[in-house]
Length: 135
Image (cartoon, rainbow, N blue to C red; front, side, top):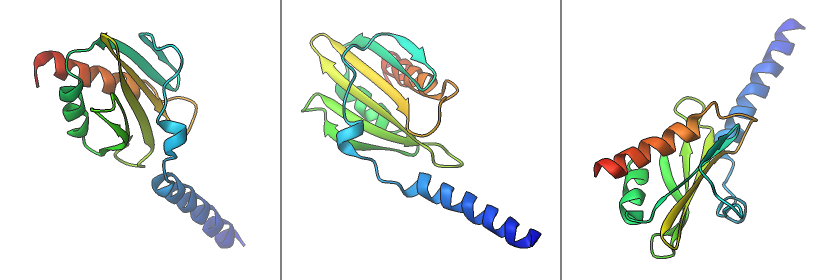
C-alpha cells in the first residue's frame, strides 16, 4: 500500500513538472503591458522604465540569454514579449518590452507561483547593465 501511495506521489510530481515544462504560452494573455509602468519590484516580478535608445540592442541582449525566446511582437512593432525558463524546473517567466515615446518600458513576471524571489528584477537589471555597457 505504501508503494502504491509513493508511486502516485511520484506520478503527481512528474505530471506537475511536465505541465510546467510543456504548457503553451497564451499570447493574448502574456503579450500585454499594464496601464502604468514604473520602476518597482513586486513579489511576482519587476518593472523598469529607461531611455528609449537601444530597443534593437536590448532585443539582441535578451535573445542571447540562455533559455529565452521571443513569444510575440517585434522591434518594428515596438513591443516584444519573451519567455525565459529556469534552469532546473523550466518554470516560465514572461518579460514584455515596449517602446513608448522617449522610453522603453519593461515588465517581467512569473507564470506559476506567488513569488519569483527577485529573479525577474535581477534578470532585467542584468539586461539593462549590458545595454548601458554597450554589450
